[in-house]
Amino acid sequence: MRLFVALDLPEDVRDALTAAGQAADPEVWRPVKPESLHITLAFLGERPEEDVEAIAPVVLAESVAPRLELGDVLLLPPRRARVLTVEIHGPLGDLQARVSAGLEAAGVYTPETRPFRAHVTIARLRPRVRPPREAPLALAPIAFAGPSVTLYVSRLHQHGATYQPLVKAPLAQ
Ligand code: 3AM
Image (cartoon, rainbow, N blue to C red; front, side, top):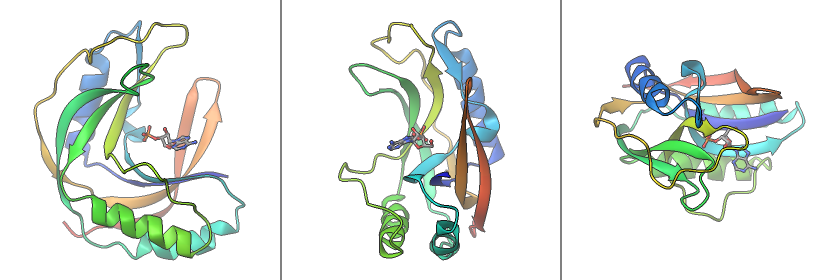
């Protein structure tokens, strides 16, 4: 199973991000579906199904939602963009570091060496399209708190991935 752990987004934030993704040129960008919008905390990659038992307590240990805010719209990677993203500002680093260390201690994850840059992917570049050099839009800042941390299984299809929640930890707001 292709697994990742993510912070979920409240509905008003998903609505704003969906509108932003749909406002980008549809010939260049394929917007992410509202139900698929999330902040990735740890991408575990292909794991055996029995690992879910070891991952669940790490996810369920989280209980408090950090206060966050939507930031700038950015192209990633900057020089040869594949995705259109929105930066997330605020104290998410501690939660991400706990999840990452917990997964490592459970023996199911090798933490990233790259620094964590919290973001939401709102659109993906269509195939055979030249990547633009500048983000095509801006976004009003919105304050929010993530409602839950979730372990997802990602299933790849011809036209993108679908995400199915396996373990969900609700967070106190
Ligand atoms: O939320 P975003 O879109 O940033 O890009 C993938 C997505 O992140 C990322 O995991 C999330 C759910 O698929 N992802 C996919 N393959 C990856 C990899 N090999 C990866 N992240 C790191 N390494």
